[in-house]
Image (cartoon, rainbow, N blue to C red):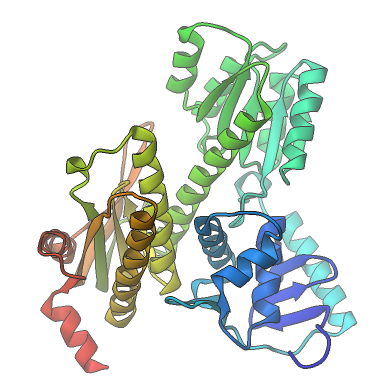
Amino acid sequence: MNGGPASRLVFRHIELRLDERRVLVDGQAVALGSRSFDLLKALVNKRERVVSKEELLDEVWPGLVVEENNLQVQISGLRRVLGASAIATVPALGYQFTLPLGLAETAESAETADASEKRQQAQQPQHKTPALAGSLSARVLVADDNRVNRLLLCRSLELMGHHVSAAANGRAALDLLRQQPFDLLLLDLAMPELDGFGLLQERAGDAALREVAVIVTSALGGVAPVARCIELGVEDFLHKPVDPWLLKARVDASLNAKLQRDSQRAALRRLMPGGPSEARSLPDVTVLVVGLHGLAALEFLPEQMQELLSDWCTLMFDAVEGRAGEVAQFCGDSLMALFRTPQAAVLAAQDIGELMGAFNEERLAAGLAAVSSGCGLARGQILACTAAASSRAAYACIGTPVAQAQRLARASGEGGQGFLMDEAVRAGLADQ
């Protein structure tokens, strides 16, 4: 940048207010965690060049030893908020902020935007507004009739960077859930007026409330309460007294799972404007299928397998979203993504190959076994829709390109090749 950094920067649909640590997308304020904002600020201030991963780790996590996948998770979260094209991945080098700088607003127009933002927020139906916006800074409700437990839980969550509200009984918690947007509910079971089980039953019958993740915190012992909570759709169960480190791990896991569900729903809505419940034919889509191979033959402890799949998932999502793709299906050791152009899909496949090479180098250096993956691409018409039962729904993509991409991914993995594509994808590349 020339001269000192400006306090307000505008990039197309994004406004960054550095002094206020605020980000507006299309005039709407979005919630970013402290690390996410620091990462965005670093990328914006150095946008004239590629910023290495090591430089970003040093600037965003100064003095700390942090794994690289933390950086990749934050980058993916920023892309969900700002758009996939806002941050480019430069393989083996790092990341670069790519949106062009626009004219900063005048003070008068900024005030007008703030007033418009407040009016729009007031007009939006609160129970349908998503609170989670691409980071782990979330809206959390604590429902517990014990004042000491309630205050300590709220303090722990606030120290994690979350926006916390509290309710002293189940009825008050239910009213708040119906009035305001929340991402996560920490719920005690033994409460007056409406106990935790009663609230969970109300939630089970309300589609909007089912979008809120739930962690039960209870002193009740035995297997029966835990089993009943799982039947009612609870994400996790913590016994009191709650350990702060375990609380953070469970809260982060629940919010990550919700963020992934929200992202997948948003992706399908963008592809199907009528909503994911409306089946729609997509006439020209490039399907990318990628999967891990040979895991059954490797001798992994359960914890090692979980860590492997989590790291692999982080890398795959980053490669897909970095090329403006949308993950349509994810099954732990495989995923399917949709792209509007064959060029974008092929670039994503190339990125996946480079990421897997670097990933295996790190694994071998740590004394771990390398893993293999296969990637297949096919192009054509598919049907996107949802398959739903009373308690669960899944996105489905049906069509010849889907089956062909799956076959090519298997063949690629078995043959040790980077990726395979069908003739329709090749023809699309030749057209360009």
